[in-house]
Image (cartoon, rainbow, N blue to C red; front, side):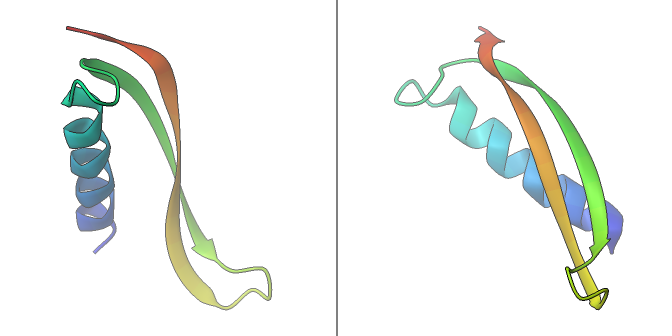
Length: 56
């Protein structure tokens, strides 16, 4: 399940970044998996750091 969450997040970010309207290239992406919410309940989500530039 977590692998699918990472793949979906990365595919979405890469698809948007390749569009000339946004970045027009392939950015660097670093992602972190969080499994708990603020109240320590099970709440899996991903935070990503995306570079401001990319490779064409």
